[in-house]
Length: 640
Image (cartoon, rainbow, N blue to C red; front, side):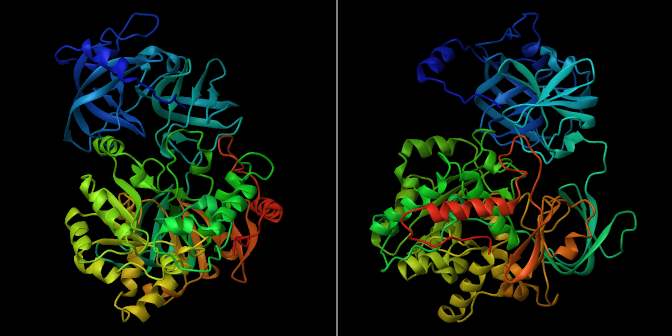
């Protein structure tokens, strides 16, 4: 955990007055100090450094010139977007932030190469508490978890000395007191008076046990660049990644025959999970734009009802439960990633951590910023965001049929913000001019037809968007005006296409809308959206004809989903299939679409609220909250 940054304009200006011309300095010289406080001798000076990126976090990255003490430094910047292994050179100011040496205010940045490595150095536990290892990529070995602490921190010991570990990045290891670990790797940060090892990924933590390593047998519908379909293939998974797709059965790992089509996990690219405990608001009329229905008296009553549910048992007491219900319902439809909240500002955003249910689009390592009302922000806000490094700005724009709704597009464009980072949700009134502008800018569109039709009686011209070359994704919006899950949205969108557009959108295109197109629209196409070695093992399985797999997806309902895998973890599906995975535990039986299904989402984590609570208890408490809510504008929406 790190403090929130607050730098006043005056303070920064005073600091900048002290900067002379930048000088090329080794990171060792910046970090090395005999001052007991750890203060760098270069504080207040502008320097140029070079090295390899060893770790990337939401608010910056670590650059190391070589393995070893004093040879790495944290760069506090979201203006650059390096990956681990990138060689970079940059110019910035040296500062001490509550005892940690950092480089910030980057004035020059150059990417030199990729694919480089800096190996962690082996240190003892005592050295993992020393200034010389600050920001260095280190490894400690043969330790046990001795204490679970607040804010995601946990302590390990070798029996003589102890040190802290933290969760600045997510990882799928959930520490338990007494766990023995073969090793922990990470960079050493300093905050709140303590040094802390920050593991970068799950693979930085060696529990001494074999990681998840198995294969699924089925027809692999890859959605890769060639749209390959591997009939009766074997999909090998190691940890949270896809390793290989092969035709020959592997005999050194367990194989589970899923008896169906293996597709990429679906991506819900536009949703509002905190509201998805209530069904459709029964508006008696259609509207010209979203501000009209938001001003309707029923909307105010709806807000009172959702507030009653949210605060049942105390202020925000049901927040995590509502998120869990929304994500679990999405999981039953084969969804493995969901959009809906900017959740990287603090590790206290427990509801968005890996491990609560499914992945969050806005959660790091994605670099995504979402805004429901982007034009309420001043132009200066967007100028600042534009200067920062973001993969996508996911914005609600032009939601309605009025000229005012259309003008929102012009407003966004006039601010100079229409570029490849723009992903527009809705775009209902757009025509050829807007589609051409979006295509030229390489901007993206997210289509939510059910919500559009229910509120405005009209939806987006998708044939026009596709014809212009705009990347299109599809999502269900939220339950108060959209559909309950992405499979339901697919069916309704297909039906509308058949009726309004002579079925011009093909089954393959619909499948792309919720996999690879959606991944691109929300800026996570390097990780998910297709079944390719090195990508996340986010998968869904449905039964169907391997020669018509996209039709099978369009016809599927949650009760037809045989298996959903999130980050390599089988979490939902047919009980007999889940039983074949020897490592799947705490399976709850639930009914979905009249079918008996298994749900395995419980984990024991001291950092994730209600992580180990049975889902059926969560559901029962939300039903109680609904019964106590007033007024009863909307019906309760459970798992089904």
